[in-house]
Image (cartoon, rainbow, N blue to C red):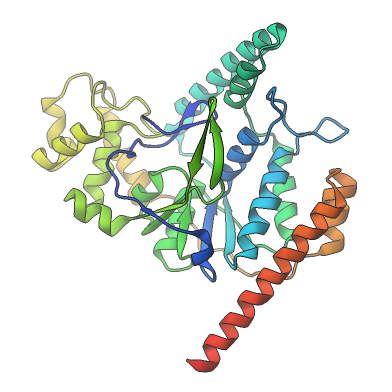
Length: 351
């Protein structure tokens, strides 16, 4: 099955191809995790809803589901001693325009289906179509960045794809892990991809509750077990379909794509033996997007103490969250951060 998020297929479908190792977040104390911000925010917008699909809103009608997820999930990570840094998308490559439009159309259709389900009072379908119609408003980005600053957390503005920047930070050692749901991070060169970091725990899938556990995917291990170079892994991804050629080649899944690239060595060599390849003239451009994405070193990663008064003003008085619960989360977050700092100081003393 492809990766489906908010009813939209995202990223390359490596699910059945990539070796994954379960991990406990509490074992990652002290680790820096570069998180794909858009990916995480969309998750929160999709998941945090009323039974009929209605998102959390303030009295002015502005959606606050993303703030709820961002604050509570991130505070939990900090309580465990993890050091998150969120990376926001910049300008998307031109080749992604058709995929962005495809997603927009899916949301338009989902919105129409939601209205029909609402007219019938079918809450289960309302929830499903509400997730599929999820979209991000400009104010959500500003609110998210303001919240992170009040929490004392760094965030990075990417020049291009956020996951490409996060992968770059991981590859150069500025972050221990790159966190995203998309396997595309591997194509961008992430050495250690951490999945399910913002949605671990029990989640509803249809009528069934499933356990979602964090997992690590290591690029060197993946390449070794698949018998590929990174360039060949990119070619496998292009055959299956990426955000820059979403349809891939009809009838070719992960295992067949792997077999073809191992047989012919490169996508260029494999193409003459395939039918219905509609992106031949784009292959090199797609390869270059993954091999040489737009990234920046113009950022500063620094963690500060949370602004408790500022957080209460913003989250409780402005966004109308419950003050008692916000205060308790701040207390746990601060305690976890202090504990981690003490642990680091102790390790330095005995090193």
